[in-house]
Image (cartoon, rainbow, N blue to C red; front, side, top):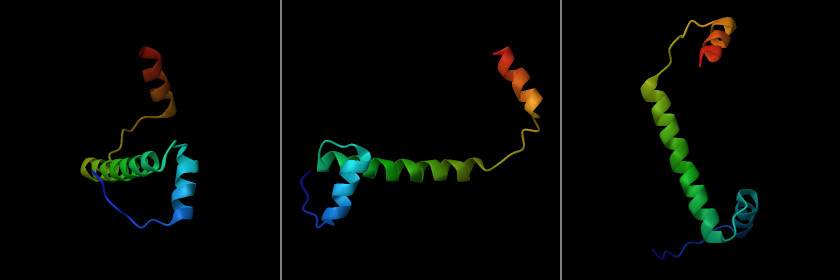
Length: 67
């Protein structure tokens, strides 16, 4: 889909560099995917809530050894 946007050039250039993208399009698509994924992770954490596993470091080490 073609869309015309007015994007801050220095911000876009930095995004290309930081993301290691080979093009502006790749940088924009990667950045959008990161935003969506971060939102999904936040939603998942909110839905799952928190819980106490009641494991000590030793319990966890034993569990890892049993795998």
